[in-house]
Structures are given as structure tokens and as C-alpha cells.
Figure 1 (cartoon, helix red, strand yellow):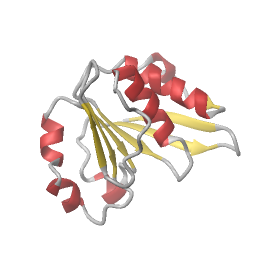
Figure 2 (cartoon, rainbow, N blue to C red):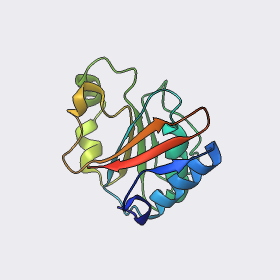
Figure 3 (tube, rainbow, N blue to C red):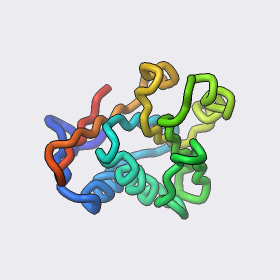
Figure 4 (tube, rainbow, N blue to C red):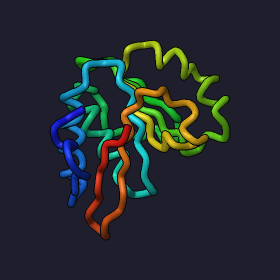
Length: 145
């Protein structure tokens, strides 16, 4: 996907660096990509997403979808939808809110907690971004799949 992931995880030492990494990733996106973000609470998924959305030109990239499950961003150079599967109880919830239509839309889909339900909702070509705590202020970000 991007040269930053050629050989090893990227180490990120602050929220600002995580947002900057997201901007680099977002600059490479053209539409239709599905990014599955995986990591424990506080690993940086929302900050990484914020950077991706900024690079896509989203007007309000700072909003977290935690309480609404999805935020649509249609005002940028590429439309995007930001999902949070954390509170979903079953895949049927995502399907009920139009998951299949989102997949077919050509929008960039950013999915926090994408590994819920064993990743069953995610298409085979999902770009998995795995975020891990290294220490109190450092995270690693790995592109898998």
C-alpha cells in the first residue's frame, strides 16, 4: 500500500505522529479501499483515522463514531465512511445499517474494531492496520493482509 510499510512496523511516539501517519496513508488512497483498524483501547485507531480523513479532505475528521456507529464524510476528494464496530452485538447490526451498500459505494471505509465477529464482515482485500502498545507513549502500526 505505501512505502512506509515495506519491511517492518512503523513506530509512532505521539498522537501527532499517529495523525501524520494517517495523512500519509490517506494520501495514497483513491477510493474503494477498506481499512480494518485493530488494536486495544488507546492504541491510536481514532487518531490514525483522523489523519486519513484529513488527507481525504473530510470536513470534520475529528469526530469519533463510537456512539453513532458510522460517520459519513462526503465532502472530500474521496468520499469516506468511518465505522466503529466496538459496540455492535452482531454482524446483523452492520448489515442492517447498509454495510453491503457501503462496500459497493466506492468510498474509503475505515473500520475501527474491524476484527469483531472474527472479521467476517470484512472483504478479502481489506487492508488491515494492526496497532499495538509498545510502551506508555509508543505504538507500533503494522500493515497486514
